[in-house]
Length: 208
Image: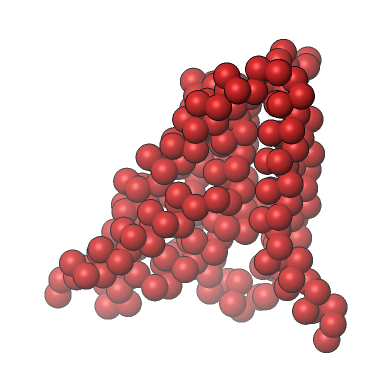
């Protein structure tokens, strides 16, 4: 039996590319980090997103999806924690000022912080659970899961690196403190906006 058909592999690669390149919490923070701290200092952040998300995909296939299906409140609790953490990160991004002289203690996200963030990132969970459920063949699930993880491993890094590089590209335009402040507040608002699906779900739940 073929592990994964060429058509399914092409669809998986397209899904990995589109979901990795489109705006979301990870890419928004990498864009802001590239603008505030440059690409070199953002590398640990990128590595944490890349490897942390790949590990999350593997964990999704190893039973976390079934666990959430069996205990929906656990998934809800994770979403709430993730939402609150994203709001805190948005506040940190809004107050960053790396280009114009960072305040004491300002620094980019570390590898461990970025990897841990994947566990409370709503988009990461949607991508991981969706990829495993859709593209891992049930007949040879373990091998299929490895294929899904491998495709994301290959596709994800160039996509997120592009966002950090884009941030570094506009770095010169943000030399003026007022421009940098406007940029950081925009990135913070985009992070908050990424919580819209969670807010909509909470509104529907409250309206029951």
